[in-house]
Image 1 (cartoon, rainbow, N blue to C red):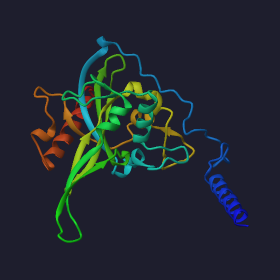
Image 2 (tube, rainbow, N blue to C red):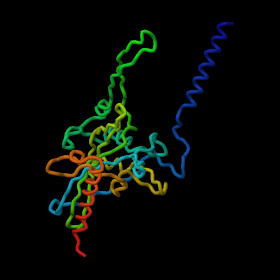
Image 3 (tube, helix red, strand yellow):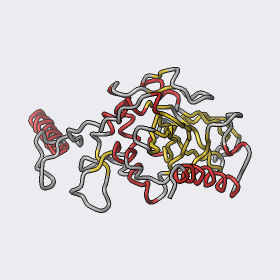
Image 4 (cartoon, rainbow, N blue to C red):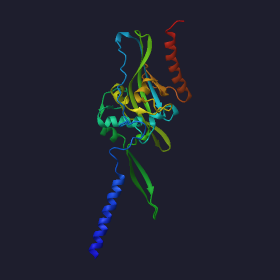
Length: 284
């Protein structure tokens, strides 16, 4: 009798485990969540090719470095969604997936922001593991203090800014000033003892990443049916940013010779100078 009870109990446990596993299993062919079946979150698009450019046609050129803050309302589509859903993924998730599958290359941060030392996905993750030494007190007598080490894994949601390296140039064949993004650098925001600390992670060569960005959808706040991609966002300049560096003889950033409001005014001065240069090319 005892053996029968044990056997019945084991069978009941197996049945319960099997039913819970079946409930947690994801369907291979889920229902279409929307008007159309969108597949895996990518659309079959290729990046718009750059217009042909000859070196002899570039009469003027200037390199600028910008920073996009995801916390600004117009830039929030870079940060959200935190959890991928409805074929939308955050900008940082797109980059990390591209690095993981090998379709995108990360380059080590250097003083000159050049693409010199490539990094593999495992190196990128390993570099972002933080180690903190903390001293705690035991809650029981004699209430002695003890040291402990806290390890923090890489958290993509802490990436709340991205830096852009871009070249502005005047094409005499088209008689217009144009811009090309050369590289992008995710920047992590960390909290160290109540103080906000920025940490640039790596550089990505933008022309190499364009095929990935051109197939990754972003949220269009005006019309869900109008599909836009991250490549469209950079191509159409659908973001707000501020300049933190321009090419100069000292190779220094604005923060090295201005701070606070003076730094903001200097950033606006550089932007207005670019606008006025284009305006002065024409006579009315």
